[in-house]
Image (cartoon, rainbow, N blue to C red; front, side, top):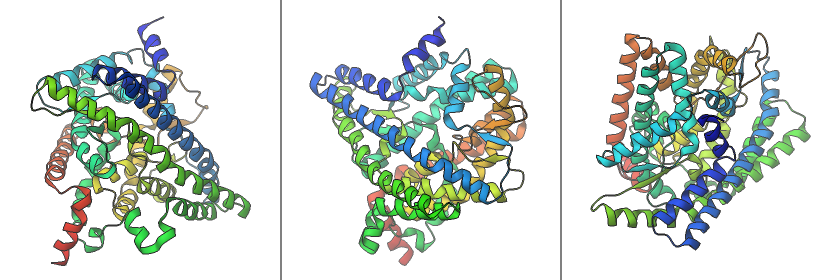
Length: 455
């Protein structure tokens, strides 16, 4: 048994086992009492398993509706969307996959030592995302140096995103010293210019979230009501029988109502853990603050996130129909968490902004998936991780950070414009980082913008 097989065996039970065990061990390291550490781990299990069940139910319900929607529009596209599970299977099948644990931990350690980050990335489950980036780079360039070098940049970006989002997450959800280090939040970088432009348009400066909508439209703003309405809309667009539409809408009602309930277990787990970690680290490193970096479901209690993700299914199908040159039919990856989570953190939960940004930026993901289809197809055939029908291609319609990964691929091939594109992305990243770091927190942001626009 090789090292890669050993690593995959450890991770095989999934994030719902691996991450809670890691949190319990870290909690004990940070001097938490055994009972509290185990309680944090148990609450994380409930959070991850509950979220996994709900997302699975959501996908099971949406998949046939998406298929109907495609058939109703006469859409026939060649690239099969295998979603993140297909991409992960290809990534773990690469013989060098296990080495990226060492890369991720090593880079994190170096940045912590030199005080270049505050984030300790505990999201080892998503190391496969780094593997995918490296494998794509290696496949197109044949260079291990480029693969490891550029993936190191991705690791650094993830840690700096973690530094940035901690204050936003604390303000919106009440977590302490907890952040998200998933590369999917990099979508906020390309959204930033349009979101900044929205600061000067009065309608976008009003607080429009689930809480404010509740004051204006009452019951219709409740997550369950939004789920039911969106379910009816998607069902009708798919031209399903009315019984199927009502059944789908009922499932959407229940799922949308349960997401915030399940997500609160993350708060129950991470608040005492974050406090213990902060206390321990401050005792060892004077005048320094540390954050624990985890996967995106910790922000899953946001009703705005799920409303945006669900509405974006309609946007995906619309753009798949009208975009020239698109070969991707959104299917397994039709729920685009990149747009929803990135938009949530960037806008502070402004629902109107999140929906508009999702509509405008969906084409990037479809074109990114179309570009990567022949590459992922050949990688899938090489690893034999996925059974690919003859004459077909595979892709991932909501691939995380498609712009960054495509720039990396072309940089490794020596394309000058890819270096320009990458530098432009980094310039936007720096601008966004500085702006959000100095801007008021979400709880005060839109009150200030409203006063400014009215003045």
